[in-house]
Length: 86
Image (cartoon, rainbow, N blue to C red; front, side, top):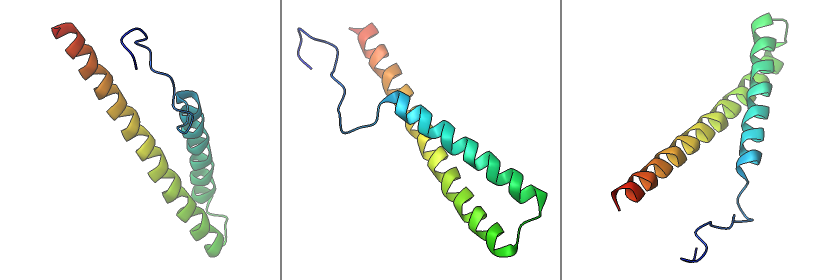
């Protein structure tokens, strides 16, 4: 980022915010579907275990996304505070 251009260019190797939001929403929808399937109790044990394992992975993915978003918010607020102090 140069002084003449204060807007940083996005890094093509990282997913955009829209991509991250879309991935989070997709994971949440899949997790909700899994929970509904498990709550019905009509699945065989092996299928229930497979879905439970997938659900745990999705929950971890969602938690990581939320933690990343929270960190980004804190960074942005800290940057905003630094700008106000200057």
